[in-house]
Amino acid sequence: MKNIENFTRRKFLNYTMVGGVAIPLFSIIPNSNEAYGGVFQTAKDLENLTELEKMHLPKISLPPVVEDGSQASIVCSVDHPMDEDHYIKSIQIMNFADPIVIKGKFYLTPHNGEAYISTQIRLSGGEGTVWVVSECNKHGKWASSKNVSVAAGGCWSA
Image 1 (cartoon, one colour):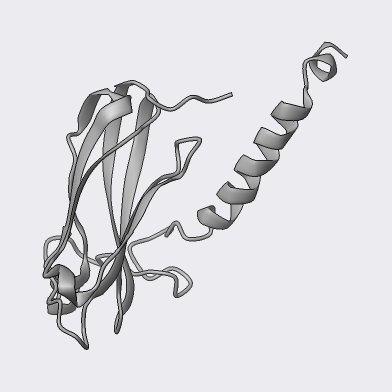
Image 2 (cartoon, helix red, strand yellow):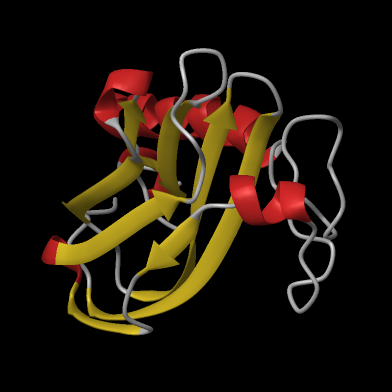
């Protein structure tokens, strides 16, 4: 009975909001290095990338250990041409271990010249995996991930 007394309307709304966002997003996590349900593709063999994988997989520059999760620097890039008829449409950064999963989605056009994002994100404390998904206008979504350990988290959780 004590747990029910501490359960406020605000906590209920927080839990339903997190669940409503997290459940659909968990469906895009691949359970192997193969395309998962047609949502996005990952590298099948990191040592022997195909030409299509080399051109579409995002590169992530993020330190393996972050001291302060409130200001984690990340650089994401894709070695892809930015032609009028073939370009990277967007780059999205996510961390499913955080209360706020989507860290940013950046839309690009051929006028950007290159698919390159440098920003700071907030990460909660502990171990996690940062996912970066790039979307090509012709070849769909491609994802890479990088494990990170955060000493002091920047995200508040209930």
